Length: 286
Image 1: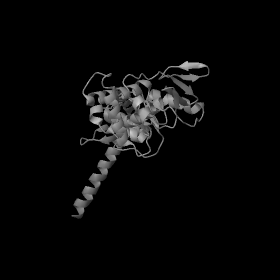
Image 2: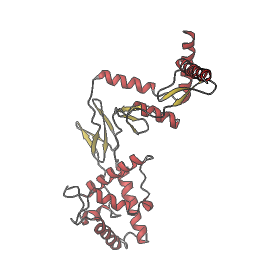
Image 3: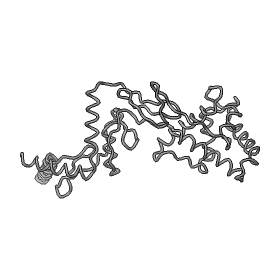
Image 4: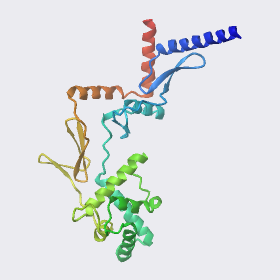
């Protein structure tokens, strides 16, 4: 028994050492780790998890990641090409097209509930239906705030099919931002709440929302235009500049980020080729 235990221990130790030796000569891309197969061959696999440190970055897929590791791991798991767009969380904005699309979906839904395409003859009926919904979701102060408006939209979410983004988190955020944009559109007294009259005006089919632009240093920018403020990115959305709020750490850091972004452009195939080349170089130096 003693001899068997010692033999088993030696075998396990030898295997561990061999695994470490194999992976010592293998380079894996970011978001990956080297493991040994049953045959003792090195293979790069996606990390199971990353550390929880918060150094947020925005991916080229418009998804925010807690840190670079999370971004690279997601690229590995999904087999997609993702690089860092900029430091900090992604800048999610509701553009005029998003706002108007949301409004059109609600107007269409109201018309479908009334069962007619005749907007003129349905004006009175639409007014009554919207008044009913207003009373249902109003908390008693005779005004709808953004939370109550969102509840109104959620009432018939299946019929509305309000999908603004591929990811659930971004979709919910965009919906909330576009509700704020709708309220701002019809909020005549600028209290960020809609009275019954303002609510009905907002969703009247014959109403055509005006286009809004952004101004900067005597220039006018179209909706969706982007500009850079030091290390921060700004986007014109529904007539307002929306910017990230990063603390700029100097030109050196910006250059590092740009270099990192270029390196992160590699696809899975390119990573594999680079890993193979580095492994060959490593063996030659051993």
